[in-house]
Length: 106
Image (tube, rainbow, N blue to C red; front, side):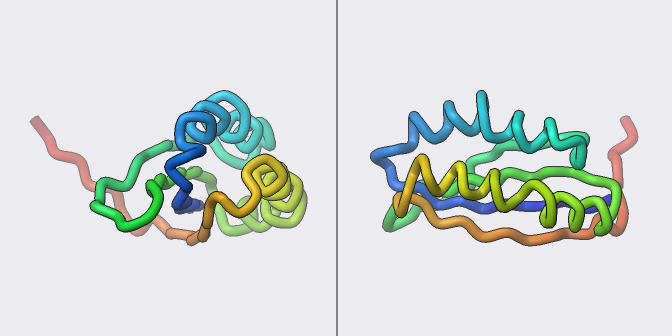
């Protein structure tokens, strides 16, 4: 399993609108590509000098699926965010490969 992690630092002035748009529009649009089977939308809990940081983690089955997403869907979806919020955010992306999942037995 692959986790496609998008970490975004946003300007506080757009936080409410950005969170709502991510939840109602952008994340659902990413999921509608069929490349991912789950998304986790989290806030990074740190004291920051500027902005507020979030992490969106999308789960997919393989690097090939992620590459398909990157080649066929990501440019338009990333442009949509840039067109809406301009320079009021900064994003970086990482790919994580799940090595193991450990569960506590109760």
